[in-house]
Image 1 (cartoon, rainbow, N blue to C red):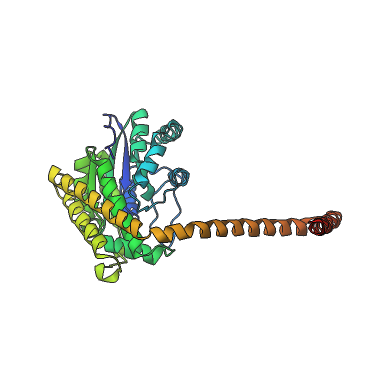
Image 2: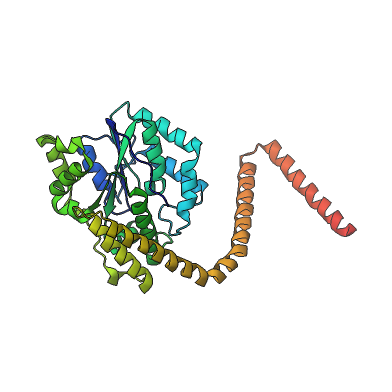
Length: 356
């Protein structure tokens, strides 16, 4: 997986906020918005899972979801091979042109954009290409939160069919490859807890590292807005490894990944030694996943026919329901015609059966 192309030196800039869901990406996007950067509208509406708002453009979410569906990848996909599937979408000219056009429209509102979506990690190369075509430079901020807390938070707020193992595997896959995809470009890593504990210190350092004029020039009014926006109580889930049920080998890879990513959040911590350690962890995670795939092969083979049967049954049930709804909505004359047609069909089938 190669790093994305180099940025250009321009007044226009796009700050990409990446990282696993439930890692503080919305908080970071909101802070930058309150400090004067522009989050394209309309935004995704706040709800109980994110009462302070998501800080993500609706168009971006829909764009990413469409691309992921086309390549059969989901937001927190644990498959190492999913990166190559998503990468193909990023090389298609149609997608590059669509994103470039949208970016040009947003630069009519501001020269400093904040783009946040947990799905963005899959398409960082695509965003870099579109930004360069728009005459803009990019910076990437990757949010960090302990993996056990991420899994615990997803369990608490998302529910669904995924469990501890698949969610932890998804975290490891997304974080390891996000780091690799941003390597060599303008980037910063920020701990969620640091933002909650002392956002001023963290954001000031971030502004210096990424040359964000909005942060450096923020006045008292904007600082007060951020003070009101940042709520230390946002850390509502405090899970540890003891709260999860996961295999030892996966937990060890995730913990080692977290340890190395933490070093990247330290001043001067983005070093070749850390890169080498993360490269090795990416290989280790791939081995863990391959072993799990091989172990579950019998289940995968058995699920194939069952899935096809379930699909056929679901389609038949849907067709029957649609036919019943159409019959109920039909006029009396149409209902009489449909009844006569069905009766004729039954007689025809009986005659054919007798002939056989």
